[in-house]
Length: 327
Image (cartoon, rainbow, N blue to C red):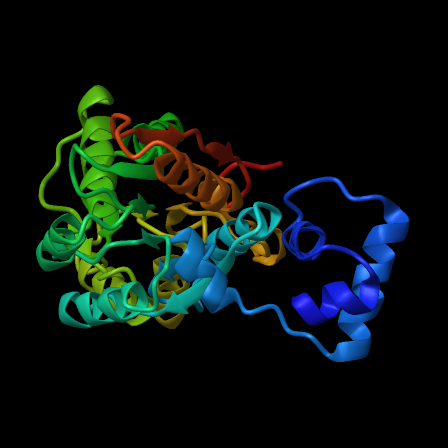
């Protein structure tokens, strides 16, 4: 930096202000500094700066199953907000495995990140214990871990109850559900919403729930099991990934949607309008979830003593044709 300052004819402090954007600098001076940087091939030593400031301006992100369109959108929201706030990201995929999840977060933390954003597994006990013990600023996204932590998710229970309401309004009395991975807060909330919908429409729940484990193959098996009850006329799937498996199972057993069986989903697809019939689904604000997770984390970094917050974002019910509607 001293060499850059000498070549540009400015002080080292001015070079610092230009490179770190910490104070306004006249355009001509800024240009002189940047030309000196280019001429000398200078690379800003972010590691050295982090030792002085105790901040790397880096956020760790641990989210599984990045081939899920919903989670891809969520990651895009995280990245956009982080970059806009002057942060870079380090990413790890825990594969929804509690042991690997702990290893991933520990490795990311050891890279001196300022904080962590995590979509926790179904058994995050060791992860939470690690974050608490090392006082790692963290935000849980999509899935919750209980009170006392910063976390952001979309509403789940009531949107699923409204899906059941909608099917009941179409005359369906035997409504099955393909639920997600046991242990996840999202799975529990969506099952609770399904049962609430049955209760308020005076429908009897006779164990019409089958676990799809939050992935297509699991949902395929779950639907196959549910279809052994020939009285079922409608299905609710707990996420978009499972909807793929459910649609495949219905196709392979010769069921037409919605003529033979109605299908609705929690989680919308970008290409839901391209399905035939078009899919009725609850749309989550996936990118906004990512944005809000970053904002929660930055707020925690700015004020470590503030009370933990749980943020729930509203969803949107997209009425299309797979439920029997004609739009």
